[in-house]
Structure formats: structure tokens, C-alpha cells
Amino acid sequence: TVDVPDWAAAHLPPRLRLVGPHGDEEPFHLEDGVLTFPVELPSLGYAAFRLQPDDSASAHKKPAAAPAGLLDGVLDTGRFRLTFDPATGDLTGLDDTTSGRQLLGGPSNTLDLRLEMGIATSWVHAFTGERPDLELVEAPDVVEATPLLTRVSTTSRSAASTFVREVEVWAGS
Image 1 (cartoon, rainbow, N blue to C red):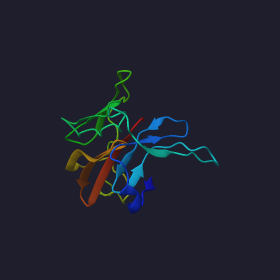
Image 2: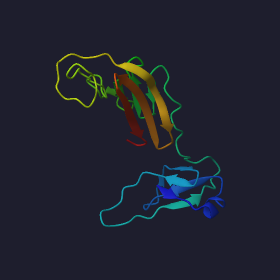
Image 3: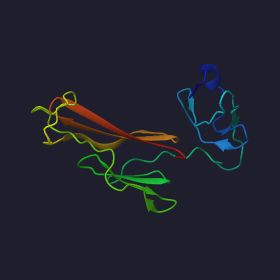
Image 4: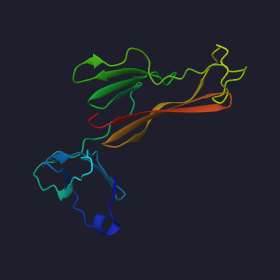
């Protein structure tokens, strides 16, 4: 993440491209004076990136659009298709769209809350083996979506404990 000074941001052209150290265009997100892009730096070294005007005739590799959101519990990022159970918030499917393979063998990012000494909090650790019900407070929903990152959040509650689960999907991952 790089902060772009106000004086510089005011003079940026409307269409930009980010060029990496090897001359390749890199995905980026520029909003409110903050430039965000994924980077791999050499150990004990540096890499130079250049933000340049994009004067090409077409839109020319503008940063990929962020996924629109969940549709019937499914988030499609282009590379991955994530399926969430709207009743529990569990991640139940992760498909690699390039290979067509399902990458999960069962639900993931699940909560396994058990009664501990007769109460269900996240602070007491004496398992009784009983499992209390979880109340879904907020169903899975996209809480952040940029061309680089999509974050899905689910909130559940049991007794005095509130649990927020987040799944992050980064561009190119």
C-alpha cells in the first residue's frame, strides 16, 4: 500500500496503468489517495513500480472489476467459485474454475462450539461434549470488494460470545 500525496493525486490522469520491474502491467486499486497492489520483493532488495498514464486506444487491461457480491450464497471471482451455506455461514464449496476441481473435502471455516462447564462462551475450556446452537446474526455477505481483495464476513452468536468469520480471496490467488 502506498499513500499518494493530495498534490500528486490531483494531477493524475483519468486512466492509469501500473508497470512492474520487468515491464509487465500489474493489477492495482487506487482510491482516496491510497494505491494498493500485490508485490513480491526480493529479499534484502527493492523493486521499482511505475504508475503511468494509459493512453491506449482501448480500456487496455484496466484492473479487473471486483466481484459483485454473493448470489444465492455463491461468490464467483473468475478464478474461484466459493459457496457458502446461508443458514450457517460455513464455506461449503471452493471450486477452481480453471481446472473444474472442487478443492474442499467438506465444510470449511466452521464453528465447533461446545458447552463448557454448562455455558457456551469462548473463554471457558472444560469440554462436556454437548454442542449448543449458534444463532446466525449476519449471513455471509461481501464486506469488502476491490479489484485486489474480496472479503466475505459471517457473524454468529452463542450466549455471551459473538464470532465473526471472514474469508479473504486475493486477486491472482
